[in-house]
Image 1 (spheres, one colour):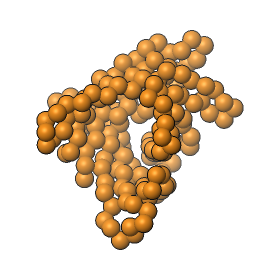
Image 2: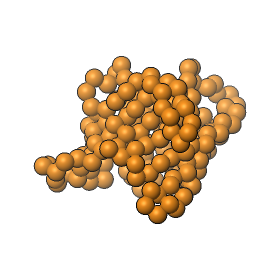
Image 3: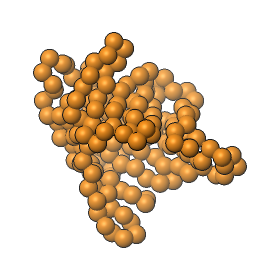
Length: 170
């Protein structure tokens, strides 16, 4: 794989006055939760570290919005998690296999993107750690103006109660 992630997940207490979501989620959302990803470039061996922390929650009539310290805003809707970056890009993560019979297709920043569930309730060994009850989300994408080009793809793995635990190029 081109990139390998080793997550470190921290959980702070749930924001006062709010309860944690029922049952462990593949993408837990709580104010104070954070993820530290260590990314090792397979060619150069350089390790970079990225921390993502949920810093704020806003309740709207139809959904709760969660804000990360990197400017990303996230919300859940109809079995999917929508991440909207500070630069306007959108990432949709389908996490409810029962609600997703066909790939979910959308466009963002000049790309045509399809997301589908590859495996449900499986285990994953990543960087020497074993993760139970994982879901695999397969992403295929191509430039909007290139209809005949073979799409690029990668798989992202999410563990219940933890979130993203790995990603590999396909």
